[in-house]
Length: 439
Length: 154
Image (tube, rainbow over the protein chains, first blue to last red):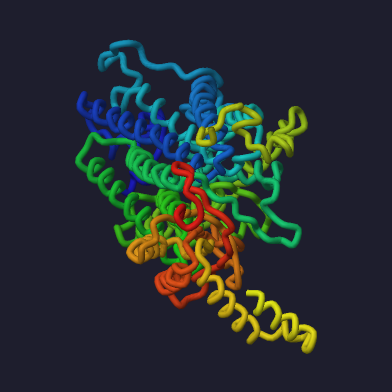
């Protein structure tokens, strides 16, 4: 089990070439192990897929009603483009299988993902000792799409559709896979002993950094901050949708973290997956309660939107290490995530960084916390390595995203006109209101 | 009424500042009320702003006291309370206009006092924001279906 946590999220072929993994995950290749491992990827994959629905509903609920259709359009668009970009270049960039252009940093394989043939037998499978390539591709693809979903919420209500989608393609095709290869593709961060089970840093912080760079270059929504430095609240359009979205994300997270065990072919793996499900749930519950109690104390009235963010922050925080904590420590890690969000949202507003749905506090701040928190429950983790990896991934993603945002801004502009923004993107950019209630 | 205006004119000439005196209004209101109540066919429009949660209670009390109709509008406004503040995602904001219910009730003069006191007693919570009642004279009322006018129409 300890060894397993050292290599939590390898690609299919990396597992095969890793002596450690072979000892623990698959002693004797059998059809059953192959089938169960693939099944975990498929179940985990469609749960993580469903998180796209969660992000969509959360974001549609938290933006103003004049921008709901646009937010949904961006979520559909980004998911589609992420799937294609990951297929065309991302998958092989993320899993070089030992073929590096620059050792441990840049994959040597540039090209589309290729699945196994139709109806393969044990001998024909790419890796009979582990799982089917299709299941692995499908599972990893969904993580990549989740990263892009994080960005859309932060930049909502003012960014143009196509420049946003162009960035999505570059994020999911290049930035995400490249830095993910450093850890999950067996690159230099993995070699250093960096631990990030399901991606507090690799997925969530990366989405958060890209969103932060975008928010800084894009600027706040018109009227969000007054000249005397006050924050003007823009009310959410639909809290039932936002709540539904949060519960969908919560559910999807069982696949996100549980599937990241990456194996289900032994008693130990199944027990670990079960443990991960329970810990993930505990962290989310504690995150939401922390935000509920804290907003009650600070604001005299609980703030539902913060409670929703709190649950998600709990989930992000436990993502770096959902296996080793006890239920109690999982709850504490999640609760601290919830606290971080309640202070992080107004902090960003003070800095005049307009993050519409709280994506940066949830995914970036809680992601950093979760990555650090690994050292409290997993003795294999080293604080300095965790911090080093947070900084390296953060710097790379923030700078690469910033440059891309800047280039896109210079070439085509990224922001709608003042008039279009005030009218609302639904009417001005799409000609289609989300709620046709005014006849 | 003529007599009342004569007294007012006399007072105004003799003590020009009497209009500012509150006691006058009490006197004036009581006088006009008494005077008007005696004449047939005059009506009052009672405009009341109340807390929304009190609407059903007020409606039942008024119906029991014999009021047969009312107009209800959802409004927003502020008075002495002058709104309040709320917090959304850590940012404080002012709620300048507080939701209220406006009742428009037209009754004959002799029913007016009863309606006013019923609304006052029922809508009262004793807390800030209970609302206000205004009373205006109504010149005419017509029931569209039958063509009845005045008291008969309300």
